[in-house]
Length: 123
Image 1 (cartoon, rainbow, N blue to C red):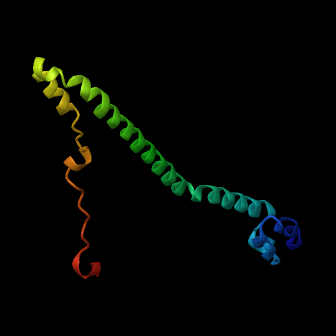
Image 2: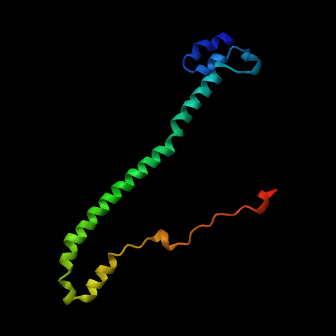
Image 3: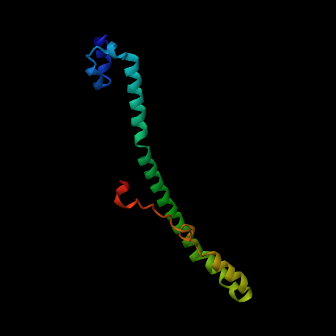
């Protein structure tokens, strides 16, 4: 039975170590192939957090670029259109300028505290 694993060893080098009496341990070619497929599936997923971090970084850069375009539109076009209203409708102009202020909601919440371990390392 141990020699039957030799054909599979080309796909997974660790299977070459199956020169033991695998039947004594109830190891079959099918179980080794299952393990190999599970390892391959894990290898495909293991880099997912890194890929997600890259995508998030790219999205942040795109958002910052679009925000710059938006600020340019406000500063160069809309603000100039609203400026004449200052004298005719000061309340509207005041509301308009206040609406341009960006509130950082994350900074308005209390920061989470990190639990401090007990003195002496819990011994």
